[in-house]
Length: 355
Image (tube, rainbow, N blue to C red; front, top):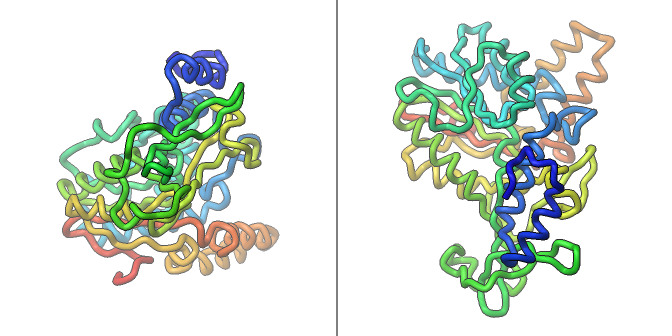
């Protein structure tokens, strides 16, 4: 495959590859598409393809900053704590987190996990002190880490399995003429399916995300070995559910995921139940997985909105509207989840049951 910098249409590359070697995995299709997409643009904001919570309101990042500062204080105020953000967008979230945390003495070194050169330039403007990494492997290994990942896991490539007449098969991408279509692979995949799903009806689809599993495995191991805490915030299910959740967004509009590979953001819902089990397998503590709206309310977003509105009455309606986008069940409040993890000796954290 050509490098991400190639100007050749990615759809044409995929079609040639499929004709020459047969159907490709959805993992490859999604992975190559998003690598091309994120390497070539800033996708955020009204002029981009989508808007994330930090761009909606400063309250989102401020409350995460207060959560991180509270965790750090309760854990003993380690002088060497470091802040790590995975996929930090334009750096807006980190800027808000650090500003809010600094009021309570939380002033960590900052590390960004980011592969996009375009976004790194924006992040460096927002948080000049940030250290950049392509992946988790080059992070410090001897200090506590506070991880934040907002809408990071959903863009990692998923693998889909489908129950066919002959058993479970991997769902792949093939061609009908010039059109991309889903096809069932030939190799049996029953061993990759949870036992309670083996006898599901024909046509049932299950999704897994190897990249999300690997990320949480690594983060959880770091928390156990080094101390710290983590927040994974994304839209998804608290438990494994059947069905394809693959979608594409371009210019704030949902399109067919096969319509414009490399030119649209491909995402899938995150399945948090499996990720929590993976974290616990590494002896990290799963603090809980809760709805974003409930979590933000528990951290005091309503009081924060009232305070902001009192200071700037002419923006009161905009502040209230932004809060509703973040917490209302019919907007981001229910579909988006917050999963908390912590290392040994770190507290339960506000917003989760048992805190």
